[in-house]
Each structure stands twice: as C-alpha cells, then as structure tokens.
Image (cartoon, rainbow, N blue to C red; front, side, top):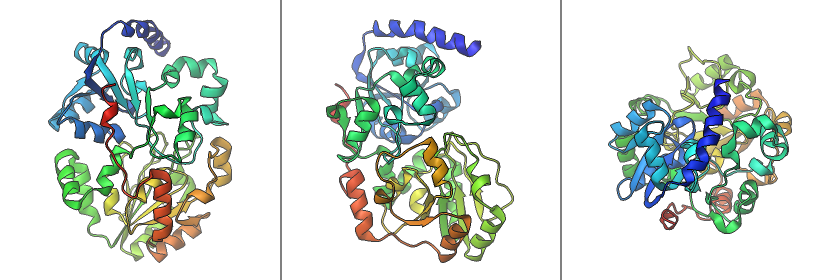
Length: 387
C-alpha cells in the first residue's frame, strides 16, 4: 500500500513539474538506484570543471560521497535537490528519468547515455520476458510502477551507425535524435596511463585502490562479468565449481575477480585466496585496464573491453539455450562477438589453464569499428547539452 501511495503521489506531482521555468545553463545528473556510476559519472566529472552541473541522488550516502570528491551534489528528496531538478533544463541519466526523479521530469530535456551497446533486444524491441510485459503487453502492474519507461528521452547515445537503428526502434525515437558518440565511461580505458592514475587517485574510493594493490601480486588477472538474467539466477552458484576454479587459478598464480550485475542475486563467495567477489555497485571500469582477460557471456561489456589492445576474452555460454528464451538477440550473436567460447565449466577451466590468449588484432579492430565507428571513440557531444 505504501508503494502504491508513493507512486500515486508521483502521478499527481508530475504535471506540476511542467510549470517551473527551466534554465538551459543548468545540468542535472543521476544514475540508477541513486548511485554514482556509469556513463553519467564520467561525464559529470568531466563537465563539473566548466558547467553548472549537480549530481542528484535519492541516496544520502551517494551525496556525501560525491561531495567528498569536491563535486556538487544534492539529495533529490530535499527542497534544494527537488528545486535543482525542476530548474535544470538538461537531465543527463544512465537509463531513465527515475535515475533522478520521474515525478519532476516534466519539461526537462533528457539525454539518455544508456549503459551498454550490444546485441540484446531491449525496451520496445523485446520479444519475451519482463521487458515484453512492460513495453509490449503493458500490463497494469508494469505500467503503473514504471512510468519512467514510457518517458522518451530527447536524445539517446547510440555509439555507432551500426547500433543506431536498433536503439532508435527500442526507444521509438527518430534516428536524428540519436547521438553517435563513444561512452564517457570508456575514456578511462583509452586514456594514457598517467591520466588514468591521476583519475583513480582523485576520484576512486580506497577500496578500488586497495584492490589494485592486491592484484599486483598475481601473474594473471581475470575478471568475470556475466550479464543480468531476467530470472535473476545466481550465476556463480549455478555455473561454477568454486573449489575446482580455485585450484586452477592457484596453479597459475592467477586471480579471478567476480563482478555481478547489480540486479543479479548472488551468494557470498568466501574463503578463496584466488577468487574475489566485488561489490555489485562497485565501478569496475578503473580496474579493467589492469586485467589480462575478460570472462563474460552475452554482456555488452565485451565491446567496451575490446577497446583495449592485448587483452583476452572468453565467452562462457553454459546456459545459451535457456537465456534466449528470456532475452532474444537483435543481431546474430556468433557474427558479432570475439573470443574463445566455453559451453561447459570444464571448457572454461581449460581456457583459464591455458592462460589469457590475446585477441587477434584484425578481428578486434573490425569489431571495434563496427560498434564504435572509430578505434578510439570520440567522447565529446557538448553541442547537445544546452538545446
């Protein structure tokens, strides 16, 4: 009942948000679940030096974190935060207006940075699963509790000409409202080592710095980043034998970082010297340059990772048949991925036992050009900030 009343109040408030005059000079940023992450985080840090930009969050701890970095932030549920949301002409989000507060979004010019190029059908392209219920069937429950899903952005970051038709259809936007530009979060993957170290020192928490120190003691660093399953399966318990994995890693003096999707249910992984479970909310992008190989599946992180030279990739596809029942692909999967494929846990162990195998440069560059248009993407779309 409390949740129902909260959303009812949002519906009553939303029309009033159109009445407040908005300033084109003011930018408001936000991310899912009130966190400080994703494309919005990196663009906010970049623009804070030259724009009137404020991070708005429903989490007081996130506000405190951002302020501790010397950046501006407000609790969006406070009078100051709500007023800033209402006065900001441009909202820059990682996914939806709920990244700030949907009820206050009337009249805002929304730039959706999204959170992953890739192959999976999403939004209005969905053919099955919860997304299909939300966007195609529009069941009452899905529609009532997710009004942000139907609030179209004015602009959408789509990365490349190859990706634009898919995302334009997914959000029912004209292709002229899609921005073909690199993801801001990937700037830390393609910048110089000096700039990366400077960024980490200034903007990353001590936990990230400590982890980077820890992994230096190992000969190889692997990271496993599986995508979210609509069924929210515990992918670590289901797809891995941790004891055998620990033994294989130990023999190579290798470490494996497990990074769950924020929506994934996971059991704690404890007691292993060569396996580390990262917090689901941790920003992994400053860590990726210091890994040797990525293990993933259908996740779009593959296309971010291949922006870096000399890395290995293993696609662990143990549940492929089941996965496509929940989430179909917009483009053919096998034609648009790169890396070793492992369909069983035994095959995955064999791949780890062989060590990281760098991707072939011709194949890597071809896929980078397809998904990003350039070997090193552009990250500047400042022309869209004050429209």
